[in-house]
Length: 437
Image 1 (spheres, rainbow, N blue to C red):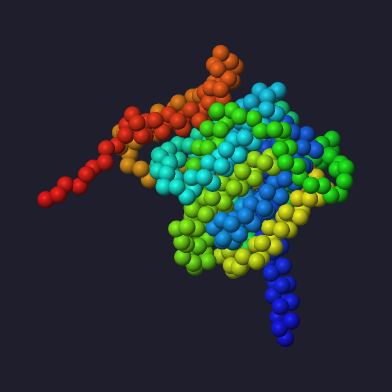
Image 2 (cartoon, helix red, strand yellow):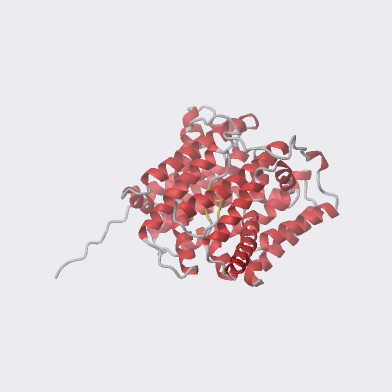
């Protein structure tokens, strides 16, 4: 009798593990395609990128489960991290993208080491307090604003054909509507499956209308391969990239904390303060791993709480099984090759809703502030400076020292640094001390 119960329990865990694996795949599949296109990677490079992204996402999940916060939370590419990758890729000169990828490797490694070291120090809270709702709101609005052009050029078919393409636009619109309907109307496990269903429909329609580029097919040399470390080359240091990476990792601390908190609520479990610290430490380790394996930085995904709530899967064992499945898939080039043939337009359309939400989060942060003259001035000046710098040609900064060029040519970074300066130095609010009677 006990043997039968053990078999049933193992079978149930296996089925639940597959559910976790499919959920993880939903949050992975579009990343290498979009980032690869931004850096003009070849089909072979995107395919191996897909393999490494699968491996790191699965491994990062296990690292957090066994070494970090120890909760059933999926690790996936952070929207903010891949936005940084896309942003820098589209800004860079055609011949300098290989070097930029090596600099991003170093940026992830240093950001990971920074988080891992300071996660248990009192200073981490002081650093986090620098990023007030005004600062994070400005950062998110600038980030999505600079990426909006790339989204619309792809979704409207301009990137692929050089002009507006009705078929591509219609397919992307159908995909976006499907994802939106799943997000707003679906119930249960289907609520979290919207992006995957949208991608499947969009991909199928691209095949139906003959819009798949057959020349972009890559034939793997073997059916099994180990993902390489430093696939983009040896890491190289750049002040601007490192600064951008460290700032991004600090901004995402609130994401790590929020993910742990909401999953704790879904599990009906009280979260201990040390779990937050260990979660930040685990995120630092995972950023280090992301840099070593040349992928986009990962972060705990708060949507895991929704998955737990809708499926009722609260045990860690199924997630461990799902993460192992994703890791194993990463060792098979033919699977990576198949996933990497996802059309760029379909990938961008699948990200349209999440990135729109990111813009909304930024606006929400700003709306929560008192509309005083001081706050409006900080917000207005920061957005004006940041967006204004986005319209500057990279050639305008050729006379600037190389170490400073990547900072000044980055409207996101300039706007953020200007906002920090205004918020905490120029217009710093004095603390009102309570008077005693």
